[in-house]
Length: 265
Image 1: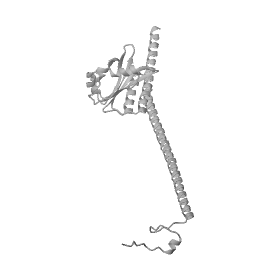
Image 2 (image 1 turned 90 degrees about the horizontal axis):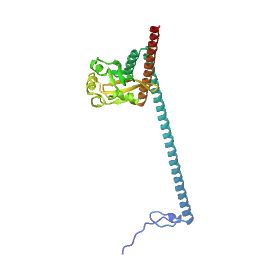
Image 3 (image 1 turned 30 degrees about the vertical axis):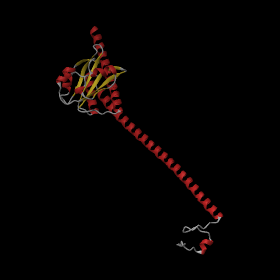
Image 4 (image 1 turned 180 degrees about the horizontal axis):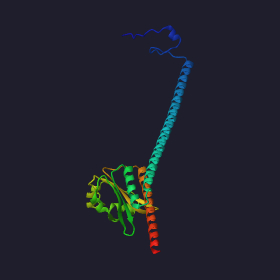
């Protein structure tokens, strides 16, 4: 029979009631209670600190989110101010040009030149809407090269059955992303306008007090890319040109009336 060996315990360990090296030396009840009470308090304090830390983290996340939102709002305001300034500059530039003349053909010529510069494209045209014949008469063309065939085909167009007429009927900007495949454009007109490299088109109505005075067509060699501010600017410029056209026609009417009175005398 083998006798199980026990490691000797120092007398002072037993005397002071320590639990060490696997020996079951009982602690004093009061000491044991104090130990677990302190341990429980430490755990509770740790939990409270952890909860406070999570709460503070959440507060910081809210502060960061609010700061980012404010920063985004400031960027949007700055973007809005920049776009509004650019829009006003474009409108003023067109206004300065078109009001230098009271002749409707000169107004149309200056207007289309200014719009080509603003849109950074190479070709454009302005048509006057004739209510009596429900047709569109070509007033001015600005192109990088002469295109007699396109002019011949569009010098006078019915409103019905073509994309430019849609701008008259709907009083809004009409878009054409691909001239070659757009069924709203007659085949012979497609061929003529694509000679100089035009691939897409927008039609801007020229309005005066909700009355359509005409349409401005702007052609692009590729895909156009306008944001909401630029489209709004185009509509505003269209109204400015429409007003200038209305004034020019009114002055012509007054001149004709004065000439008739002079002949009558």
